[in-house]
Image (cartoon, rainbow, N blue to C red; front, side):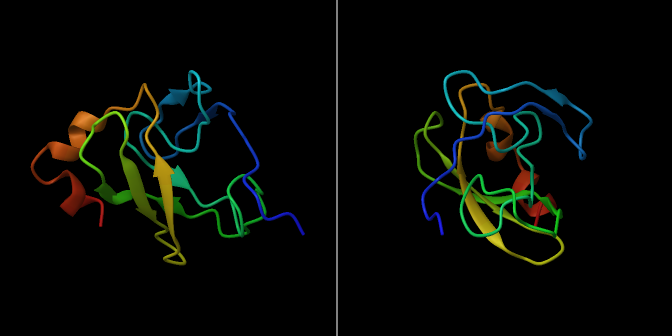
Length: 106
């Protein structure tokens, strides 16, 4: 069984904010850059696309101090699995610092 990251950089339409999300520039795409939400599609390792949950995973907190290198902690609204996703260059990270953003996504 494979245990290492499977690189994916696919575009998608965000189910939360309806943004048309293109592949990420120079990195991998795993969440919407507009609302910082992902979908629970991976089961064991990033990129495996083996989950049958498909719940929405909003950002509930972040780790780091450099806005260009934050780790987003996202939690599935169905099964409560948490995952960590690194921010991409085109992410709207400024909203993380807006009053109430994280409280509204928990």
